[in-house]
Length: 305
Ligand code: MG
Image 1 (cartoon, rainbow, N blue to C red):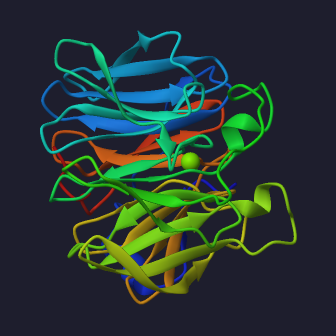
Image 2 (cartoon, helix red, strand yellow):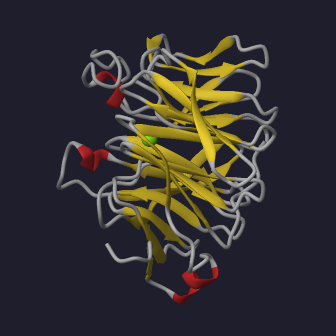
C-alpha cells in the first residue's frame, strides 16, 4: 500500500479529499465491525462488533482522539444502526431477528420482527427517511450460522427491503436480490441505493449496487447503478454533493450520482460500513473487519439527527 490512502480515478475526486489526510486507526480488536452511527450532540460514535455481541462507543476528545467503552453487551448480535428523526438509536439485531429503537431512558422498543406472520430473517442495515419512515434490509447472514446470530431456517420466502411507515405499517418494497445489505437515499430521497452483497457466498455473483425510483413510499425501476470491483458492497452513505460512499473489499469507493467511480480510500481491511461524523461531519468513520478507522475529507456527509 502506498503512503497515500487515496486512489484517484476521476479528477472530481480531488475536490472531495484532503490530499494530506491520513487514515487513523481508532480501535482494533473487533471480530466484525459494523453499524457505525454518529451522535453529534455527545460527540461520540457507536458501532457494532457483531460476533462479540457488543456495541462499542468511541468518545471524541478535544484533539480529535478518543476513548472506547462498551455501550451495550450483550447486543443481541446488533448490526446496522442509525438514528431516527428524534435522534433515537435504531438498531438491526441478528439475534432477535428484529429492528429496535433505544428510547431516551435506555429501554428498548421493538419496531419490526415479523412480516405476514413469519419472522424476519436477520435485519442488516437501516436508514430513516425525512418523513420518519424506517427502511431496512433483511438478508439471511444472521441465521446462516451461530457466528453472527443463531442458526435457523429462513421463514420469509424472499430477502427483502422493508419500509416501516410512520403509522406502523410494514411493507416489503423490493425482493429481487441475492442478499440485500446497505441502503442510502439520494439527496432528494427520490432514489434509493441498495447494495447486494450476495457474492459473499457466491463468488461468481455480481457485486451490484442497485438504484430504485422512490415515490410515495414505493420502489420502481430497479437498475444497476454501480458494480464494485474488489470485494462486495455493504454499508453506504451519501455526502452533501450527492456522491455515494460504499464499502468494498479494498476500502471505500466514492461513486458520483452518474454512477462513475471517482476514487477510493484504500483501507488495510475489508470495509463493512461507514458513516460521516465529527463536529463538521467531514470525518468518515469506517468499520473494517477488526478495526475502526477514520479519515478527514473535504466534503461533509448528509446531516442526520
Ligand atoms: Mg451490512
